[in-house]
Image (cartoon, rainbow over all chains, first blue to last red; front, side, top):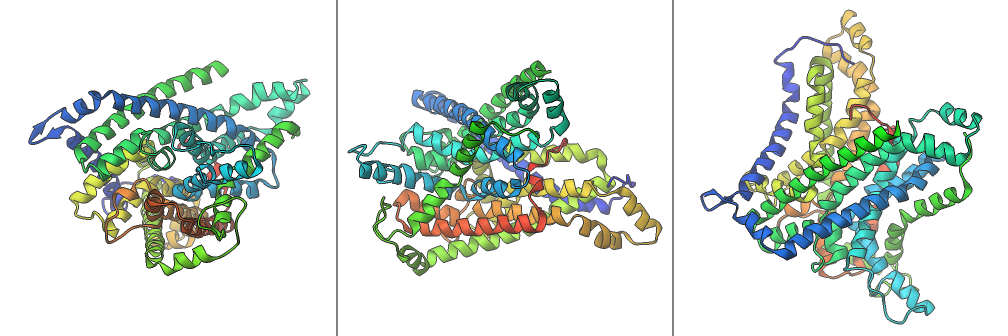
Length: 278
Length: 266
């Protein structure tokens, strides 16, 4: 719709609302920094020192990073068969897409609650296994890292499916046909045509899911409990129970730094892999 | 198109069915008569729904979430439309810069966003009040609202606008009779999508509620931590139905193509 009209100041009022919203967002980020680096009246690294000095806090960071990497990889790998299924299901695609979209859009708490009902000591899986007679005492499936990884993976798979599917839908049909005519089997076609062309979507999913995981609060608290802390649950506790906004801000800055660093590394890997495919 | 490998297809179907499974478990549990979630269920009953409706806190939270989602959806859609229209028509040069700014909250970890917004909203004196929560939701949903509107506005042929101008239509007239109708599916997608996200938002919202006001997902979260009563399954089922209906309406009125459309600029 680009008509390239000349600039007019009165029309510029149209972007005022968005500038206010963005201004408030970036303003809140500035607040975050000032809260994290201020103690009493002046500049201070006190809150960061408090975090770095505690070995158990470092464990929280490492646990969060490892779990997030596992979740991101799992989610992308498990999404591939679903995305391929939707890609091939021309007539049914819309209906199948609803099956993917609804779990994605249903509230995070509800989906996590579903996993509590499934994994809890008195939950569905344990009651069923005891009823069948496979086990006598309930297995501990949640309030540990396993529960958090299962929950987060399930919560984030729909996004990966959508991201990979949108890449797949860009592949032209005749590319596959050409590959077949030239004598490639289905495995070769997948390896040399479908997989490389779907990698951009897979990488987007990997990055977004990883970032969503390291900043997650609800699932780690509900499925991990307060003993197996993630960075998100630590921040929640700092705000809600300790009322220490400055320390929560310092944690948030560490989280931001971690995401930024991870983003740079992941982008570098993405570029290398995509270049290697050419 | 060649057919898909059979075992891969089967795996895809199984994994696809696993996605809504926990939601179905919750729905099933909501009709369980016992005090615990059991297998096999003790009896079928509606007692948890009756209990949910008897407690005014749930109705309050539901209505709060609902009207705040509606207000958020309408404001954010209007803001996105004005922005996208202005950028495409008057300032294409700032398009990519503005887009980066609009999409930047997406790469911001939610936990950090909650802490950042709680400080700002407290400073504005809006903590624990509806305008504070709506403000936060507007920032969270903006990228999801902007994208469908921007894509559908961009696909409109600029010649149509020129033709309208040449034929003497005012800008307002052209906007009302040409642009808005052609942008209909983008606007509807933005309204429903941002409404759903706002209705279900919990991670940022839980920092901003107060004794006077809470939303449905945050109240569910608080109750789960307190004690997992099956009344939560009944409430969750109601929340699932609202989201499901919104997705169905979205599919009917605008289609789902926006979700799988890959946009080079976004």
